[in-house]
Length: 168
Image 1 (tube, one colour):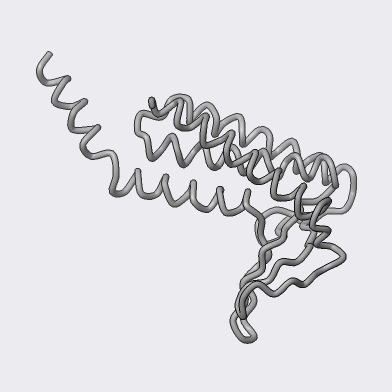
Image 2: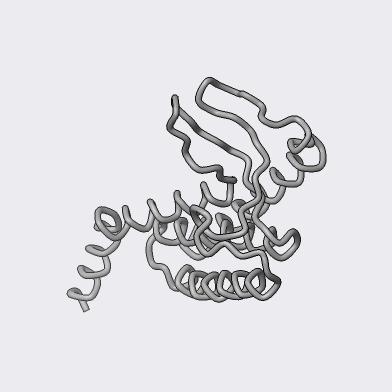
């Protein structure tokens, strides 16, 4: 599969898995009425609404703030999608696809509900990690892949391109 195809598949998968899990947890499992659900001594399912972005930064409850965050997210997603379309390596395309799918998943929540639905809560003793969703996990994995690609990956593909250029 080409980098472009891999990126598109990753974006679609991240978006669909995120939205499917949210719809199931909210409407079928009814997590809001059951919470917290302890799955392990360090992991719970909860229902939390995030009116901001990562770590609740830029929280807003006004319609103007809500739609500003939607617009900024969509603009960033378009730029990431263009980057993904042009990506030359599979790790970069995969990472960018995960970023695009995750960002779109959270944008749909914000547009539909006014906030992003989060469910997964890791904690150890009194330390509590923030509550997140599968879109957030896709975004983190996408950033990790981009870091890998820029720092360690793509060497063989880049060398092949350089060798081909030298042979011309």
